[in-house]
Length: 214
Image (cartoon, rainbow, N blue to C red):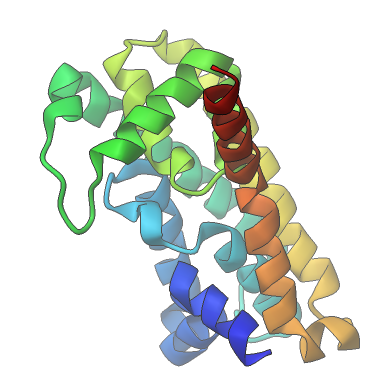
């Protein structure tokens, strides 16, 4: 269990401990984090999937005093607004985004892989990327760089936000009061993280096989 906990902490902050330490402002901080992960290029390290699950769970437990319906709507809105900001960052930055030097919070490798993801799946990538850490942070700017039709982009962003923010938060809400979930929350969070990174693992394995075959 200690090893599993370490994995979660390595992949990002412990969302449950973080939110509980914030008290009354926990939900508003969660909104800011979702916005940053979806719209700001430094947001890739933030724990979006597990955070949404924990927000739902803490609402069910009464720790976060926000109606679950209102919470889901605001989280969806934060994700959509984040996507719009990310799009405009990409639109204004243009191809220069690919030339930006690496730093602690930015890697060109992430941009290049996200660009390949976008090229492969097209507009569907905006929806699919919601469930892929790192990719969901950079896909917004890549869409802007590629000057994707804005109306089409907003429609796919809306669909992705509803599926991601809505479903994951509601999963936490309805499962949060189950005794098994309460007692095994760290393991549950690890499963959430692992499920979210499965597409990256599949892409990596596929890439290795293609290189070996070539």
